[in-house]
Length: 269
Image 1 (spheres, rainbow, N blue to C red):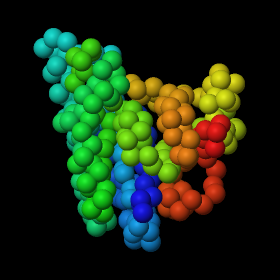
Image 2: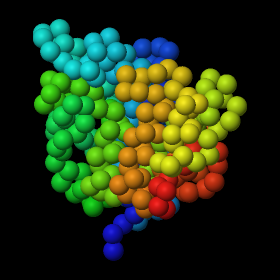
Image 3: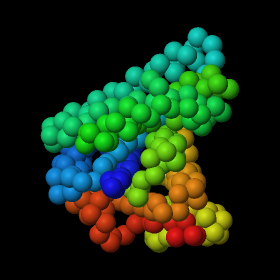
Image 4: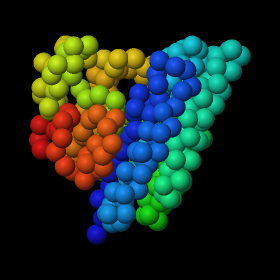
């Protein structure tokens, strides 16, 4: 019998201070790691694939060098390497927190094995990821640079990775733990959008807020669009975007408990 798979992203704005370059919220990262460990101890039969954003690490360098749009020339490739290094620095902080929580984490950086074409993944050998999941390990991916057939190089967001991975691994749910839910009016933040489907997105997108500190891979609207891509090709998958700043919110979401947030579902579900 196939085991249930959950994808979980720890958002860059959740685990870093986007207003301060290269500033991680290390206490929060550790808290989130402990909640993941508690959930997996309670549910050893569930397989979890974890991802995280780059926040004030990779996004600052990527914006400086325009890496998302493409890479060319010596300065561009040096910038490409700088973005890689910054994203990897944050990843190491996340890994240490997960190890401290006694989680068997194994990192699969896209820069080492994924190929892109015009900003989207075109090829990625997932056999090692699949083996890690089958062995009960915790595969970890993150927003990273990648070589691109048309752009030379680019930046792939965690949502980009999840879109590709979901098509291959068919998760039952995807959780995007953020520093805020999806609001109908930004920056007023007075009304959470409870549900988005491909059919309702057009009517909601005009008022849907971008992330407060917009990153190089797009704001909140872009994240919703990428997740709509997932549910359109995998109608049995449900996505949830929620505020995980408060202690216990991530654990509650992993358990499937109801709390404020936005669900993204297929119209066919």
